[in-house]
Image 1: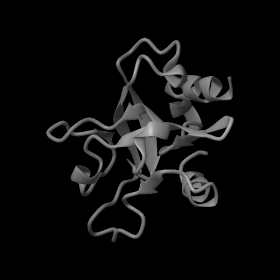
Image 2: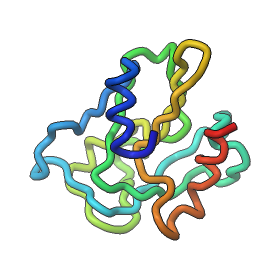
Image 3: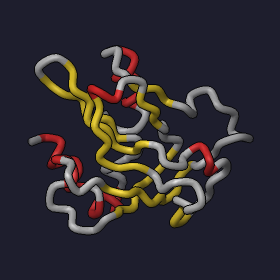
Length: 139
């Protein structure tokens, strides 16, 4: 599920994930139309073929994940830890809410899995750096 569709998938499928910025006032957290840095897990099947240790993603009023049951969830990408600004370009208010949080999750459910993108991997020209994540999710 891409971006806001992740919220629907989390609720409809009772996934062990929450969106920590759902309902947060824009005066406390705001990042509409910004490029953010994420760190990639080289061991994840979702990052297969991506050789750089990080990527840049399009964040547009996107969900920010927190995991409630780590036994069913793998983190493929996360925002940098506190002290490292994730913002590459654009506007970000309340960066502490992103610190170390997952940006791309692979959640096991029954005999299948649900991939949650906390960003828009298919956004215009920015997609060249994130298309591999989509293709790997389809494998």
